[in-house]
Length: 266
Image 1 (cartoon, rainbow, N blue to C red):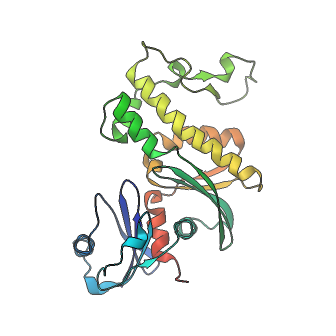
Image 2 (cartoon, rainbow, N blue to C red; image 1 turned 180 degrees about the horizontal axis):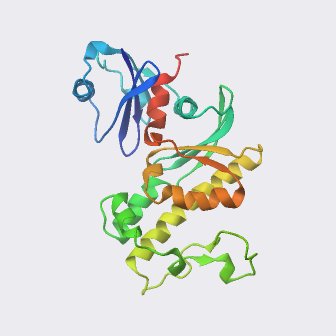
């Protein structure tokens, strides 16, 4: 038997199936979701509709999904609760902050089995998608990522060691100003990496600030933006600078969907 968690996002729908204590399968679907689509997905992964014992949904428009899926009436789960359950599936921490990097970004503090929404930012994957379309005429963020593979931040960002004395033993080049060196001669690859850095590192900095007031230095990152190839490397500079523990689970894209499947009904 499996439990389905469905995360209705602004950009895409993430689905996770839990069998016992393991993830049986995950999928990302685009467009409007129908019961037939989900049932076909279940069959494609070797299960039947009768194998589904529970369907729980979260995210945008969850209250409108009032149709039966695989013979189950979907149960709504608060998105931040789903975030907590998904993050706790990935780690054994009792006190940490979840950074959910989707179309936008949210910050949720977890202590034991309690969660608190600390706030959010409009900066996220949607920002990268819009920038990719406007500036590089790419269809999605994967285009800006492919360009950024050959970029050099030294050609686009102003770093602290260029404007002030820095301890030579310090291992990092700290960004003093995003995109400060940009002009009409900037190489496309450098601009792409600079824009990635603008979004990703600033989310990391906001996460650090969110944890300061609570003395929290452990952060679990979930959401599709975590899958950007440059994400962990750019974030590593932030975590090293602020002495934080940034955790990027393998199935981070499906953290909320996994949490929706695992959440206990209230």
